[in-house]
Image (cartoon, rainbow, N blue to C red; front, side, top):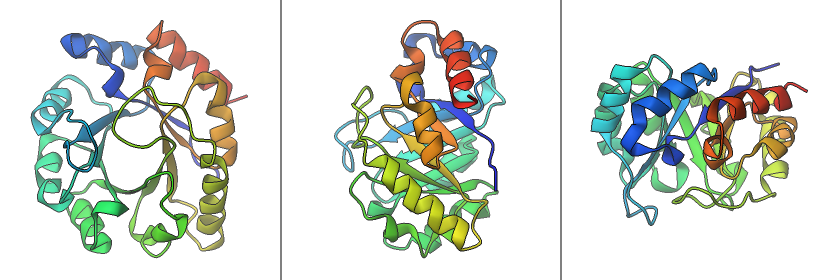
Length: 221
């Protein structure tokens, strides 16, 4: 099954003093999704943004808001992010002992539900839950900070996951990649099986709209 390739700029790399300006620039560059990195200072060694910022984003854009919850006890916050305006909500397998229940909770709000795996979490840990998810996010850096170097083991992990999904009647489940995605490696990520590309510094370094256009041309090559 051929899935659409979606570009999801990470707002972690945006200018928070001019967030609305940057969102409008991303819209002009035809971004497909806005990726929102939510960090709590416990699961990852950083603190970023919460539901009030998501609610503010919801007021200024119609683009889907992809909220990646890098937090402990995500079930406690899923309703709040859903009510704030998140369209997609993904949770880490590493923080979710009752993954089926958590994914069902996300979907109960009419949102897309995602499973996230860290770079060395075995791919098999998402297999039994994959049928309850809309997408699976494979981290290609260790979560917590932007601007990190891409971990190349992502390629074989994505190939293995895509093969599992396609061979088990789950071809509609999308694969997202987050971490170190640049114009020069975006096509390789797609060839490995990803169709949703999160990029922070790869989009926000230089001319944002032009970087989006260039990345789209690269992945459509």
